[in-house]
Length: 156
Image (cartoon, rainbow, N blue to C red; front, side, top):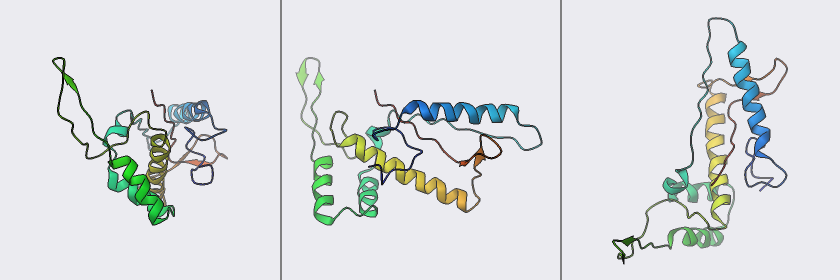
């Protein structure tokens, strides 16, 4: 995972702490507050708590294929993701089972890694926008590195 996931992501990667990105975010927001001039800044905080449930399976499959997962392994992983069914208790009775059309299961040991890889793909999409000058990166300090996103995932 350390070779596949950029340093911007800190969750589920050994040796990385979520607090690192919290400090960076505070520095960037402080820079925004102290900035002077005509040009303003904007920061988006996106809540990904429900993203587990709505992650498209085709996006997962595309992401895994792009990082070089072989066809047989890819098929096996996607079978684990797709072959699930649920039943709910409604008025004290179990309903008929139903199959979801997207999302990954919370509690599945594979899910956090799939989610982090998909977040890495999102990171690449954002980086492409920055390279095309559609989005602008910022620096927390004049000589600091360019920052275009910080990805800290906290799954509860």
